[in-house]
Structure formats: structure tokens, C-alpha cells
Length: 629
Image 1 (cartoon, rainbow, N blue to C red):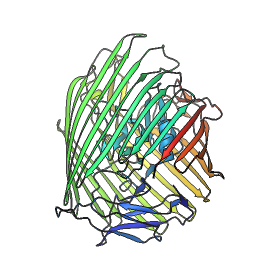
Image 2 (spheres, rainbow, N blue to C red):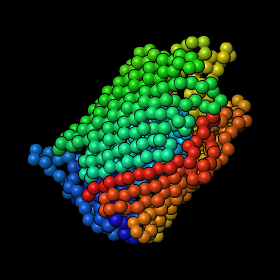
Image 3 (spheres, rainbow, N blue to C red):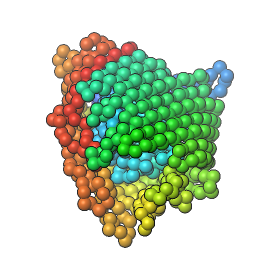
Image 4 (spheres, rainbow, N blue to C red):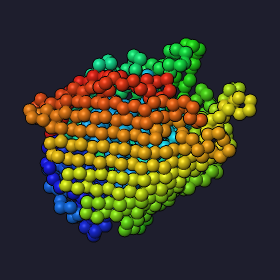
């Protein structure tokens, strides 16, 4: 993609009558840059393309050169042969228009996320710390703003895909099949599942205008990755290698289609591989299989939108050493919703999930939701109500005030959200060692933030301060008889500052992030009161550069690190701080073919992702990539 050195611009996207169009897609050459916010405003981050397009459902596409800063693009409403108009809706898609503290990863970042794993986010996305460990079928633990990993929702196109069994997605989806990934920081996301009180990771499908692109990567540890995208569809095939040489395979398939006012999609993944235990445990021969499939359809008629989606997942774990284990879980979900876009956006939904587990037996969970969203001048607010089949009622809400002025924007938000207990928390069988607790209540999290950002001629940046408090946290602890069981006896408090910036010289781009975050245990009358929560680093940081050289060459250098992390709740044991460096050299072999040679962890730094699990050592990678017109 050809980039020019231009003044960083911001513009508004509106209907002919001047009403804003939130969630309009801004992109070029088949790739999305981002989406307009609730005021219909979009601002380019860093370099800008020589031309771009704006797309919103129900409106004619617009394309052209970069408009002047602060000007407005008006989209014409589209009328189909039926005479029915499709209005733009915000029930699906981006979180960026509703959550100010949202970071979007595209293009090269997605390729790195696919090759390096979710740990790539450390030091690159403010407010996020990740642990990824456990072999060719890794366990991924994402903490946002000091929150518990269970407080992070995972979404595809704005729809939650987490399992009611343990609050995590079962399938392992390759990020390379998507057009972008959003990391939203802060809870009370409209339409959320009740598991995202700290934030959400949202995967956005490829565009229907996506040109053919193919990528093949080979790693020095034996890993091999292939992925391709074209016209709203994508596929990934992978051979994954763990840090101690365990082997696994995975595949992901994604396709989306649109027929006038009907949109449909399918996402499926299957993975199988050996697991790795910590260095302090007895050696085992564990093998895990995971699969997940999601399908959805969206029908729009005038100011009404109806969504229906289904999902199913399975997880199977087996081992024979040091003892026999045969653990199988599966679930199936149906989700429906109806939305009305009037003076208020009102959405009602129903969700039912059937679960089968060799541990917790069969269970069914269902709940209904209603969300009301309103945008008025600088104010954007949503309120949610969830009523479960057991009679439990939960409220959530978020209020955001955001002001754009030329190259600057200011915002402040406050929210209140919840996280419902999982089936494992409620119904884990009593075996003399562990036991579930059917009397658990939902966690409650409240938070606030204030921030500012700018987009100048050659620089951009953001700063945000935040506080978050969680009460009635669900914690598994032993009782007087030594049986581990969950209970609502814990509280936490998190405060911090997030910084990010970039500088564009035309031939070179430099960027950096820094997060300072103090997350403490606030459970009263306990020895751990006031101590830092386990695996929450006090700071994370990162810096990178991308420099274009003659002869079609480009070099990329990155470094990221984090501070000391305690591994227990009394701060008596910890993992040392560390930093690692990465480099890549890219060359265009032709107009559409490029090759990249990269090395991760250049200095072969020894560090631990979590207690007993070493991080990935020095790894070489070669990538060939084809991108069509």
C-alpha cells in the first residue's frame, strides 16, 4: 500500500440531514483502518493513504482523497429495488465507536500476532498483560487494566463467543484470518455477555472487497503457518511447536456473505496437540483437542434489525502419565436479538446454552437482555439489564463524554458492570478435594477514566488515567477441611496511566507505549490486604521502528518488557523483570510479492511467562506474502 506524507486529518461522516453515522468503515485497498465513533468522527493514526473509501450499511460508498481536517463527508442513503431502506446499525462490528480506550491491530500487527502469539500484545497495547504457556496447545491468560483474566470478553464481530462453562472461548482462532483485532479497555460494552467487566478482545472478519492475499511462514523451531484471504473469506493451516518441542496442528475457516439486507457468516476452528507442564511438576503426556464453530445471520428491515447466531464447542483432554485423565466438555448456544433504531437504540436478546461435561454433568443456562443506547451531542450512554432463568438480575451501564477539536480529542467515561459465575464455579463436583458453590453471586466492577489524544502533522499520541474497583470477586480457596471451593470473599482495586505515541518521518515510523498499573488485593482482614495481585506487572513498556530503505527494503525493530510479577498473594515469590528485542528485514520481490526474514528474542533472553513456564527463546522466521490488487 502506497503511503504519502500528509497532515494527519480527522473528518466527520454524516447523513444528508446532518445526523452522524457511527460505525462507518474507513479503508483502502481491501483493508480497514478503523471505524467512526459515536459522533461519526474518524481520525487517521500515523501515515495516511493517498486515497480511501468510507462504507456504511444502507448508504452508498464514498471514495476519494483525504479531506481537509474537520470537514464532513455526507453519505447518500441507498434504496433497493424493494423500496426498503437499510439504516446503519451498531449492533455488530466495531467497539471503537463506543469505547474510547480501544486499540486496533491491523496488517503487519495481525501477522505478528499470528506468528508470535497473544504475548505480542505485551508492551504494544497499553493496559494489557498476557501470559501464554503450556505447549503446542497453549493456555492464554489476558489481563486488562489489572483485572482478572476471567473478566475479559472475547467477541467476533461484536458477538461474544465465550463458553458458559469456564468463561473462555474453546476454539483457537488464528488472528491472521481477520481484518483487524480490537482490544477495548473498560467494561459495560453494550451487547456483552456478562464476562467483560475489564474489557474485550474483538475479532473483525475480512471485507467482501478483500483482494486475494496469501502468506506462508516457516519458523526455526519447526512451526509452519499458512493463511489466505479473499472476498470476505479466509483460511488458516498451522503446525504449532511448543517451547519444549511438543507438536500440534490447527485450522481456522471464516466466511461472510451479504445478500441485499441479509448478512451471514461462519467461523470454525479445530486444534489438536500435546501439552507441557511446569518445570516443577511431574512429567505428563497430556494431549488436548479443541474445536469451536460459530454461525450468524443479520436481517435489516427499515429501522429494525434481527440477529440470530449459534455456537458449539468441544474440549477433550487425555493423559496416561503420571495418572489416567479423560476429561471432555461440550456446549451448544443459541442467541437471538431484535434491535430498533429510533431516537433511542433499543435491543432485546435471548441466550440459551446447553452444556455437557464429564466433570459437572449436564446443565442448561438461559437469560434475557435489554440494552438501551443514546447519543446526544457529546454524550454517549448505554444501559443494560440481564435477567437469568434462576431469577438473578444484573444491571450494567456506561456514560462517555467525548469532544473532538481539530487535531485533539478529550474524553471521560464511567461504567458499572458484572461477571456472572460460570458452570464450573457453580457445579464443580465435590470429590473431597474440590467443590463448586451454587450459592455464588456475580462480581461487580465499577471504573472511570479520563484521557486525551492528538493527531498532528507527523505525530500522534494518547494518554489516559483510570481507576477500577471489583467487589465480590470469585476466588477458589481451601476451607477448614482443606477442600478448595469458590466464594465471593475478595475485592481488588486498580489504578494506572496509559501512554502511547507515534512519530512519522515519511520514510520511518517510530512508536512507543508505557503503562503504569497498580492492582492491589483489597480483601479486608486478611494478610494479603493492600498487596499486589499475582501476575499483574507494575509497568509494561515497548518501542518500535519501521524504516524504509532503498531497493524496496524495509527494516523493523521492536523491544518490549515488563516489571516484576509476584506469583502468590502474599508477595513472597516473584518472577524477575525482563525485556526482549525483535527484528525483521522485508523486501518487495515484485509489485505483489514480498519476503520477510525475522528473528524473535534476538538476544535469547531467558524469562518466564508464568511460574515454571519459560518464554520462547530466539526464533528465526521466513515469510513469503502475495497481495493482489
